[in-house]
Length: 282
Length: 258
Picture 1 (cartoon, helix red, strand yellow):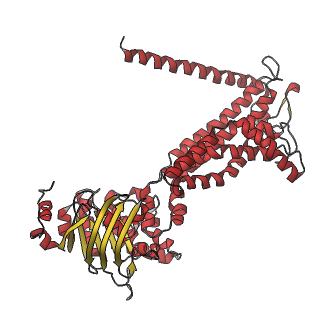
Picture 2 (cartoon, chains in turn yellow, purple):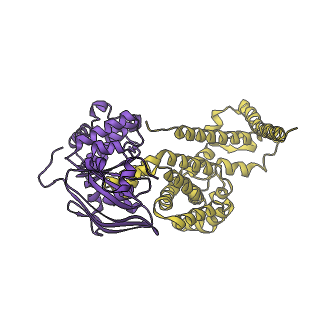
Picture 3 (cartoon, rainbow over the protein chains, first blue to last red):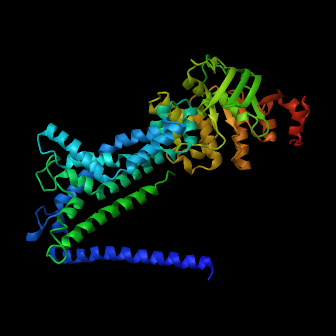
């Protein structure tokens, strides 16, 4: 057999293997979800707030709300800083400084999330506690930690978005007598906007899936309303309840349903991102 | 566009101009004068410093890193290379059209209105009038009227280049710099741009860099031949093409150039 035939077989086999594994993961989740939905319905657990899985109460709304709030707030917190850093790295720093700046951001990207959680635990939580008089654990602390965690990723993606803006636009603007600032606000950022939104969505996806850093500072209970009380997200609750709801225990299927909800949320984000990716100016 | 009496078309005076990129000289001791309202065509082989010369006139040269410029350049009342010159006002007065049409990713209207807005024009009546006048001047109005809210990207390459000319004209410049404005266009579109340049003659002092010798012969009053950063010869267009003084010029013009 020719070597390229072998390679052909290998790549096909790997692909098939990958497909099987992936489908079995999705299949297990969908199968569990199906069993759950056929018992408890689809909308009523999503809209209910009572959570007591051992007693058969599966209200997921607090977790869904928690996931969305923490993620959106984190992106809002990270956005101004990311934009500033990306402008610095793409338009202001030159040559070697720019290269080192991007490398530094990469270093921050590669910090494991447990360290961000640890930092949140020893810095942010006490700080929120002092300012608010509450325990300090809650969605606000989680958002700050998550915001800081996605900041480097968000910055690098935004930096790339800005770098994609053709220099000819900049020349056209500056050539008319516009200043660098005017060019930034009126030409560069608007031209980069679709990609900046894409960057934000990737940051949202990153935030939505983050578990450990959030778990360390959010408090892990369904507390009172507001950002300052202990709360939970879909991912942190999944992690918390895993030991209490092993396979076979009634109520185990809700974990599949939670995983399914996460997958749906992620799919929506990916879909949005692809829609925006196809935005083109006529 | 209306002219007020103090906005006369300027002349250009270049004295002992030298430019280096790092250690590499790009222009060496260039001296030349252009009278008000004339069109100078700059010709020469690739890398001879044509575009560099053009970009000195509106200081776009300083966007390149590690560049050094010496000499004096006067465009009308602007002492171009003076540290205290208002670069914003200089570039407003000295418009530039690039080799590849570079309309902004906005509507046709917003493209032309961009410059006036930068300089503080707010009134929509005024903006509409300026946009219409500029598009008429750039001979694009008849093709785009009623479509001003469409994206500039919907225009053909030639139309885009005329849009860029309209955009430059909208801030009421006195000088136009054209950097191979037809190089990326098909012959028909290129002919329209040439026609437009001839129409704009005498209202603006113009400098056009071109690889197309016929184009230089057709549109210009003066021709300057650059080679390896030096101005080899400059003169009246007709004389240059019929009886160049320098042997190098003649070789270039007749295609016996290596």
